[in-house]
Length: 303
Image 1 (cartoon, rainbow, N blue to C red):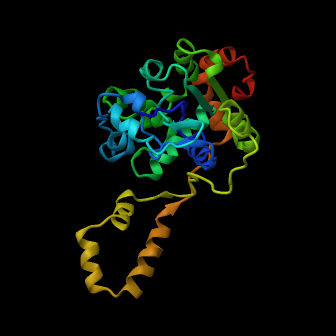
Image 2 (cartoon, one colour):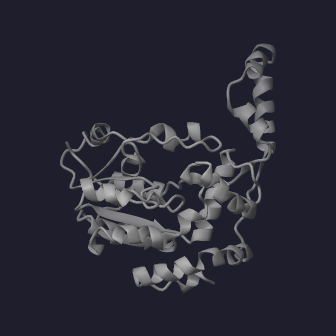
Image 3 (cartoon, rainbow, N blue to C red):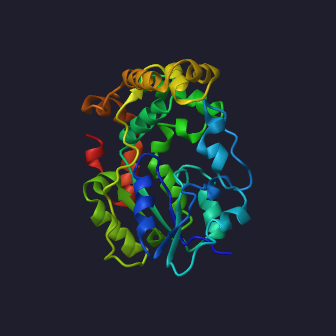
């Protein structure tokens, strides 16, 4: 059965969704129709994380943990040279490199790294947008993280821990040749996406002249629900809504619901330079190790 020959290692909230979409447009590249199968992270046992909403979240419900089921994701491969998938937890879950080495010892791997504070805050806002994060203060969410991890909450809640990139990358460098792994910074990906993308194509040994459609923007968070219960009421089926459909004409009901829906949203607080300076010391030691590991100046991350 066909297996991938390259993997996107993540990290969450660092452009993986966009990268998957662009690679999927290339005629010489086949991407798994299941964007994040997470096979190498959770092989053999379906995840059973128990944080708020984890039981219905993608990691618990859609991770592919059976080898045969994983191989079936690539049954549509025909003449493509590069075959891949993009699971955002591959960099973070400790057992992943060993499993990749077992099944795909020659695989190429790509990771995009985002400033750890920016990444963590973006993930925090994303979880709030989805009405799973009940804490509205970022600092409180970071303080709650240790207990959440002890209580077996999913990696989506590990805002800080997912930002210790040097530890995570070292596990890969211990098992694979460095020329199998290509690391990019999110700053470069955001500023010069086509340049970075073409470098990836060269790394994957496919036609670098291909230019994808990069007009679509992914996972842009413009608003957060003020009241979680009201948001749930408006967006999910319930007996009250069913009864109102019988009592209130649609031409009255729908405009009223739309107005209430709009008023229930507010713009999220942006990560300010002051906030970034406040939380960056939590990652200082790891950033210094990372720049040595990558032989790349990351002093701008420490500013």
